Length: 543
Image 1 (cartoon, helix red, strand yellow):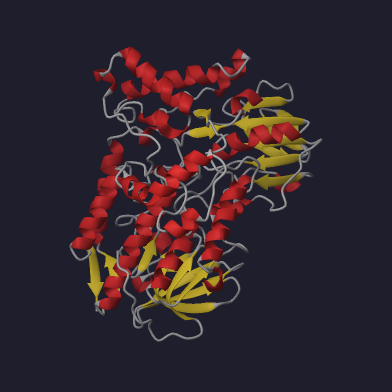
Image 2: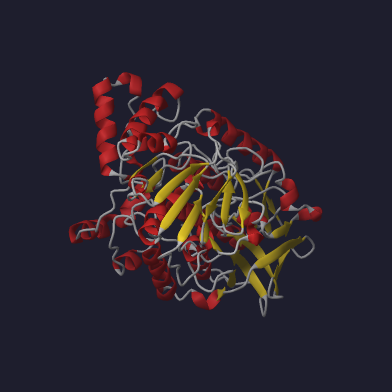
């Protein structure tokens, strides 16, 4: 990792060496690394504080699904020793406090412009600078433009007719009121049963007089097994965190809390397969997906785990008809984000909670007093849209980015995102994406993938600066090869069989293709190292 400092370019006013969009985990670490190189950096953030995803997602029950001892920065021993996590899976308020702790400890906020959304970015070929505009009328320019906008940050409200007619209040889990919402004594309609719905519905049901859940797609979910962390666990991890992070970068998912069992299901005795799944299910978390090596490779192997999961889920619901409706039968287990829950399925045992299957009773419109579905009006005082995000590309394309020769990124990505390594796109010099499409990103521990990308980008900028190289840009040939490779690897798995947000299937009109790289963090990291060692092979370095 490059640590030497370089003299910043001649900058003043709104001239910067680098401009970063987003002040979540990615933007904060990117700012820290570039400042240590002596570069003049500005971060623009739409919110009034740091946090990114965890700033906006304040819905009831919001919680990380990666264990907190791994969902933290791993680049600083000083940082981790100054912070103590309280639970196995940290809740949103604790994660946001951690991010503010880091921002204060590293004095990051002085270089962040809050309450400011970048609206456009144009590459000026003669000067080799990116020209930036914001919704506040700011104009700034920088040599490097870095999108740290997050993969799950563009909240999507479905286009359902009549929402403007609704007399109550409505909310989206991805842009929750910061002072919270009290549902006591109210009738609540929740639309969506993905991760945010599965986390929020039990909490909403504890408060509300009545809850009606509108489910389009049943999802696989298992008990999170959350619990307080012991002092012994915390102390042990503090002594190993930095080494653990190195190890995490060699794994498939950037997680060391469990090991993947490489034995194939057909090579194991049936009772051993069942025992392995039982142990991992009971332990909670994503370990279940590592029960045997071919779970995500063949339908026959996946069916073993899917049947096991459905039996476990069904046992938690008293009413057989409701249990059947809650069972996922239209996709292999793991091909949509596996959900972790605390009491979700048990919530449907409560007499004041109803379930509406919108596959059979489609939502027709939002009415004045509630939701009209299947010819019946379900009255509600409040509606919660737990409908997810325009994942991976939504926040990037929300900025009108124009590269060489007037090429707009929106136009180039009209048929789907095209990147080299998820880091850059041909035609857009000195533009970097952190955990962009074509990288492991959402299939991994995001903190590990963020640090992997930020470190690579930092070293790359150091190479350009020290070598008096003006630009770096992915070549069309390397980009085509990488896109083809990502598609080939995805085709060897069961992932494309699900209509998931990995595929963009939750957004009408969005191209259907598998966006993250499923080859694993370790394999991907080896590719990054090879590219850098070959003086950024696949990129064109310009004078």
